Amino acid sequence: MAEAKKSEGIYGLWKEKVPSDYRWYLQSLFGEKGKTFTEKDLNKKELQMLDARIKEFDDAKLQKYTKDLGYKKENLATINSIKPNADEFIKRTSQDPEWNEFSNLFKIQNHNPKQHERYWELNNKLFDRYRDVIANESTFYGSLGKNPKEIKQLYNDAYKKYTNNGQLQELQGGIKNLENNLANYSTLPGNVQYKINEKYDDTLDTLRGDTIEQTFGRFNYNKLPDGKIQAVDNYDWMNENRGSIINELEAMNPIQRAAWTAKNASKYLLQGKAGLAGNVIGTAYVGREGRPVNVTYDPKEIYKKSGGTIEMPAEYSNGKWKLI
Image (cartoon, rainbow, N blue to C red; front, side, top):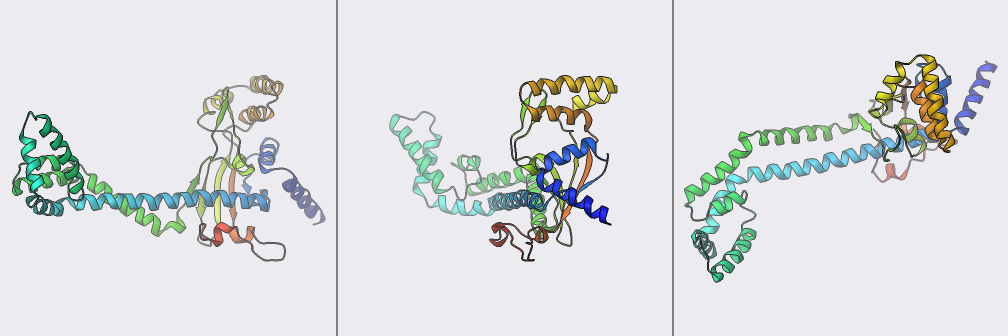
């Protein structure tokens, strides 16, 4: 028992004094292969940083869903108004002497300067006047000189253009999906991406970000029924930029891999780029295998102070972030 407590104390000190990106890197290189990183491998501050990172992306996704839903509903309303607008368009233009004048000018192939000036004056004025009831430019110009029956046919054709090519069904399906997502948002999983731009040096990239961004990079998260949040990932060096290098390394024997590592790591060390040298070693000896990540935490618990009081970030109290 005493040994267990002593071991916890040493690991606790390790967690408090060494940032998680360094800890996990070293533990992946020298620790137990395949062992899962959990919430016990992060200190409270790092869990709070992880929570903030998840909430930031979750909030951005919620805003995008809401914005996209509004945009699609506006488009649907526009399409659904095409047929009813035909009657309103016919009614208003039939009582508009300027529309008749514009129709007559439209029929003239060669305008004199005065007619040309008047034509474009009416064009701009009437397009704005009937903007709320025209389906598109084709129905606007196509209606010039047409009788009511012909105008209705133009509007019907414009409506069919949306229904025949599946645009209307696709739009309605998109609205339904977004409404379902918003209705069930508190249970939807998500994905966190890099906030920072990746900068490349030769074939090995180096990232500049906070400790948690360096540790996790891109990862998935789940919202559990009990209100906890689960971050799921694999701590490895595999990505679309390093894939071909890792494939080559896996085909090497131990001596070839060691030689490759020494050559590339020493090059960066001589340039004073220790981070890139570390990436070389991680690429060679952590590679695609890495270690699984399954960090599960209760947002309320990680903000609990020593006296038992809970002090949540302002984003929770002002409603920007939601507890599940």
